[in-house]
Amino acid sequence: MAHVSRVTRTRCILSCPRLLCSFAYAGVVLGCSLTDFGGLAGGHSELVSDGSADAGFAEDGAHSTDDSGPDVDADAAIAEPLILARGIGRPIGIAVDDHSVFFTDLGTGSIFKIPKTPASDGSAAVPVAIATGQIAPSAIALDAGNVYWVSSTRIRSVPKGGGVAPKPVVDEDGSNPIFDLVISGPYVFYTSNGFIAKCHLAAFCQRGSGGIYALTVGGGPYVRLTTVPLDSFVYGTSNTGIVVKASTTPTAVTQLAAGQDNPFDVVVDQSTVYWTNHNGAAGAVLSASLFPPDAGPNAPTHLASGGDPTAIVLDATSATLYWIDFATGSILKCAKSGCNGQPTSVVAGQLDPQDLAVNEGYVYWTNASAGTVARIEK
Image 1 (cartoon, helix red, strand yellow):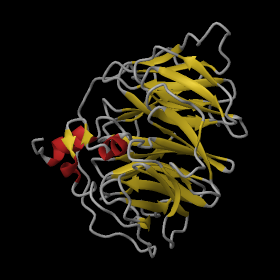
Image 2 (spheres, rainbow, N blue to C red; image 1 turned 180 degrees about the horizontal axis):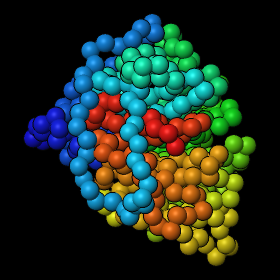
Image 3 (cartoon, rainbow, N blue to C red; image 1 turned 90 degrees about the vertical axis):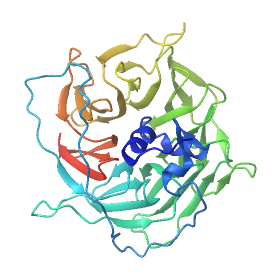
């Protein structure tokens, strides 16, 4: 394939947010060859990080200027975000605990952390590498003491403090890229081509050697995944247009919605599933009951239409949904009960926002092409 410029290449790679790494493993990313990844497709070694800060960061880039998107509340004031870290290669997944912000960096194949509380003068932190030498790291998750991430067809983990070599958790074969993961109790659940699976965290689960238990079979690539604490189900989206709940035992799979236009990310509360349809400038944010009628899937409720919604999170404290509109580089919010189809803009003009998280009073996100991690008050 023809070579493309750095800006074009970044746009091409990131036009399918946070799935890019898995598609990269297959050799082609939406028209971009693996040579456009600057060597990420080649061999790798999993290195022990000594916790030192990574140098050689570049400056961040310009903002998105795409003005297509959903109707938003024009009366709401839009604050300026605080840049927590800059000069990162291509930050993708993000997770936040009480003390730190953790994120994956596609550009350097590293996992980084920074303090959750910024410096008193508001200056950006220098990220500390807790793992290096990873193949296309993307989705990330936490438990009380560890960080877990997707590395193409693998899942790896390290203690939050780093200092040791990444621990193998799951190894799928080359035909099963892993798209997303969630930690619940003693298990990691993850999505891949045609199935949702689980692995006990105390084991090393390897395709062909046991330990991998499929919760679903068929239904096309499953994209994103979530669960409810102490719940016995996981919830996922598939690019075949379905939103499902799958028993963690496993015993059954229930379609919560069908006929959706490229459902992408998903979150749940105790009674409702919420998801994004990632479809250019004609996307939507929808909801449906976790308990569909016997006759089949629910008729979904539209919460917002337009734009290109991708990653979504639910802030339980305020009962508010936050999501990325990839078309406009914005983060929008809407009460989970609805906002009359007019979400409020939290921040605009971000360059390739990829993933987001909420913690206490702030929303955190990654800007891949800008090479930044940022936050803003909810």
